[in-house]
Image (cartoon, rainbow, N blue to C red; front, side, top):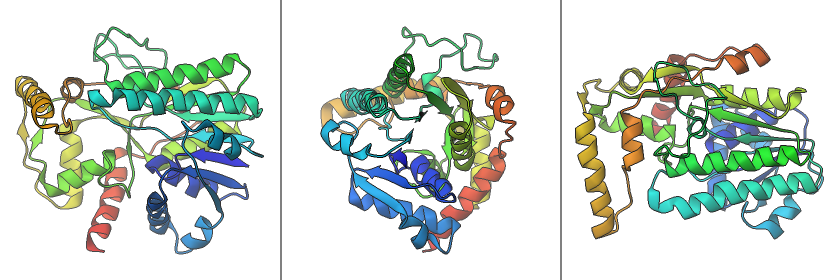
Length: 339
């Protein structure tokens, strides 16, 4: 039996679709029943027989911070893919981020140890990996995390979650950690992930910054996860990225794929500095949700270059090009717009 936590998210839903191509028994957790529709929708992209596939999943309502309910989920489970997480860059969400990402992961790790799980795969993020002093130097898995840096609340909690997984390996648990870049995949157009980028660009994203990041196709992520779990590799972490790309290039390629205007205006760092302060003031005075934190503003103006050679060498893996991923996701976005 394979357990997938966070089965209703972007990675979780695509991972389930991948796993269902085998004869393995699959159990997946969800927190809210209405989120199951998103999984069905993702399946419908790739198969006319999606309802039959979906029916093979044993769904269990469970929260990773609810230990009594979570204990029942582990019955007869041998392998665990831990995809459940809370994604937010709002500083005031730190307590919730910490509870779900760190405490929730600790619960999963503890139950894996108690139930003698054969192997755990944890989905982390490149946000949990350290930064190089020189932005032209590639970031690798061993690049040191600096707690004194002005890290985002999301990055802090994903790094903390990784520490829980490594703690588990010291207690006898075999585990793998994957650190994907920005994951490109369809079906989640307004949930704050990469899907929302496609939605914003389609609606008209007229600005860009001089920063850049690393991108990867969702199917590359789940393919690697499954290969790592089926291999003898254990207690290792891997950066999963296809290419490093500037935000300007990403938005221009996406705009072209979506058939919308590519005209953009540069937003300078000093302008973002003003904007994040105004955003903070709106939250304090009017209780508005934060949309631009200081850390996010810094990210938008920073260039990070990640190295994917470790995973390529370990599995002899070739990534899909970012341009091809953008085109595929854009086609599905436009298809959904017509429905």
